[in-house]
Length: 344
Ligand code: PHE
Image (tube, rainbow, N blue to C red; front, side, top):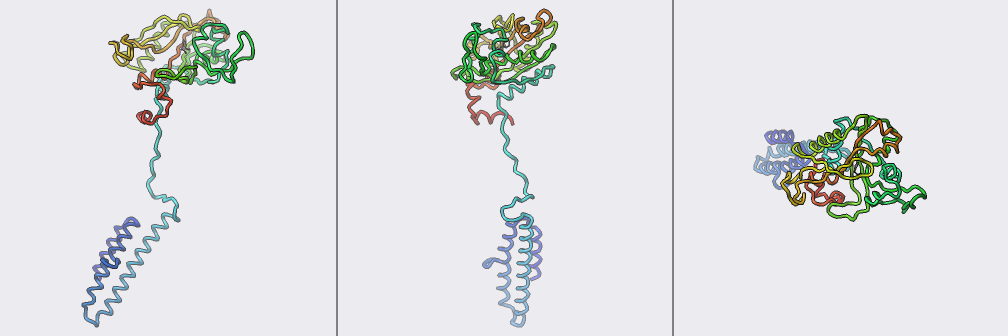
């Protein structure tokens, strides 16, 4: 009898959960295979004069075991609080974290490259006025360059040529941020302005009516095209890889003169020629140039004294190349198969 009692005490010591307590109850007090029942059965063979005392002792042990188990269960329940309450002693469950969007990753990478060399990061309005998006950038109302960008106007307010109320539009590029910043600041200037832009494009593999750009602007007293080339080379090598070669080809933008289209060696074939670069070995990656004097005049800068450069780069295009995604629309499709491949 005392051996059974000791065995029970040792088992109780080890019981950690309410589940363990239930197991113990089954093992000791269970009606069919419980150890106490087994003990009682052996009592049947004891001499009659001892049976009564043994029976009482067995009963006492049964009550003791029951008492211990109940006490332990109640203590556990008390710790857990009322039914349905939170058990503060359970380890926490880690909440599922989302993933960084590939476009955010690229944007942040561009931001950190430029902030490391002293550029400030700005944000500006996506709903822009005609003046900042076009006019002040040397694209007056009848300027043919406006046709380069198919504009989405707000409130259906396509402006009447040469007058009418000022149109509000979804900015077609981030270049308006050059104007906004220069209107309120004096040189020297070193800024980048990332953000969403909108164009009336039919979505396909490489076009989305909404995409993202980063604008860059640097203005000072002795800024040259050499500064532009050096900075962009540094930027593009940091963004892609050290072996990237950069080529500046003549181009045209109304707000820069001279203007350039910047190419890099194809990130897939490194210049050998492949389907992505259409066998040319080169990929066009951004537009840039020296700030046009007319732009300085629009913001009241002395174009004789100051010079500067600007560039605009598409974030989506860089992300397509960097992560080898084949369709720009996938960046806006909330497709978890794609998004879950990127870090949290
Ligand atoms: N705004 C141009 C575009 O959207 C890029 C650009 C920015 C070009 C600044 C020159 C200077 O393509």
